[in-house]
Amino acid sequence: MILIYLGCTAIAAFALALVLGLTGAAPAAVAHAAFAIGALPLIFAAMSHFVPVLTRSGGAEPGVHRLPLVLQAAGVVAVAVLAGWGPGWLLHGALVAGLGATGAFLAWAIRRGRASLGKPHPGLAWYLAALGCLGLALVAIFAGLLWPAGYGALRLVHLHLNTLGFIGLTAIGTLHVLMPTVLGKPDPQAAPRLRRQLPWALGGVASAALAGVLPWLSVPAVLIIGGVLVHTLWCWWRSWGAATLFGDGASASLFGAGLGLLAVVLAGGAHGLGWLPGRPAVGGFFMLFLLPLVSGALAQLLPVWRFPGPMSPARAAMRARLVRFGALRAVLFLAGGGLTMAGFEAALALPAAGVLMFGVALVVALAGGGAGRA
Image 1: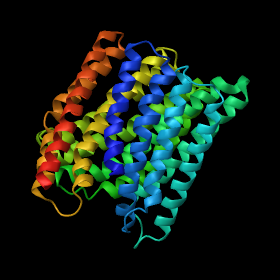
Image 2: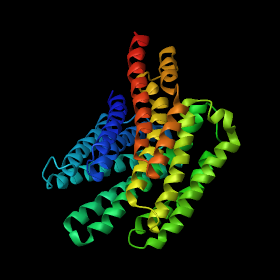
Image 3: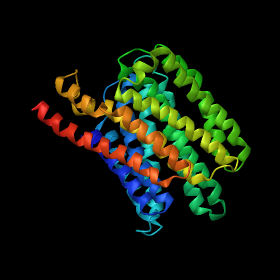
């Protein structure tokens, strides 16, 4: 039930971020509403589902399932402070809580890897790298709060390690496992591809993190991370083709998320070279990547979390409701994000409509799913 709760609150957090953005709230509050309240706890929940799969071990312990709730509570505090609703010193407590939860989760994932039945799937290494990036991101912003002179540079390090590091690495590592599951078709090259790509991805993330201090590093960051994404998308296209990828609402959303992240990486490079303001790139990351990624992943995972075990009619019915119009939602997210980054703020209505569509589908699916099981 915690996994289902976090899936639902992620969509609510995205809606909150859109509302805050439309009402002129501080950009930092908008970003943390989407990332710290919605995406980050949900990613931890997804990791708690996938780490046992990647290590061929039993399900996560109850204490591990509660760690995302700690992170979400810290995110609520951060948004309250950044929106001007609470005193600034509360941020220190939220950061300490976030570091503690991240460290505990990383230690659990390492233990599961060491106790794996056979060699763990290479996707686990992507999760460990992503968690390391999150820990470094939290340390960087904590240092920035204690050292105001270095806050600007450390804030950029925090931003890039969170977006491209934690979320980006987790997403790419998960998509290699999730996309074949969504399509019901094997991908024998997924594991070798993950092994080859990880050193490159880490180099790209490191370049992006340091680009706030050395702007010229934006160029290698774009080339490396963009290359990893193009390689992944091309392999999917070559293996399964457009009809298969776009024939299912979940896979269409996930493929759209990959395209969106590629666009965001290019926009981030333009920002690093001074050709584009930073705020559109952050908003683009949310609309072009995070929204299609989370909606596509939840369309596949929520039915499994709601009805664990073998496939059942109730699970199939719930999935069918969630994947319906998935391709249309992906188009709304990508079109709205692209137009918003180009300066058409009215285009925010497009991703807002996509979030509303998925929220309604989620409510109907959960209500129908409960009836189906009964």
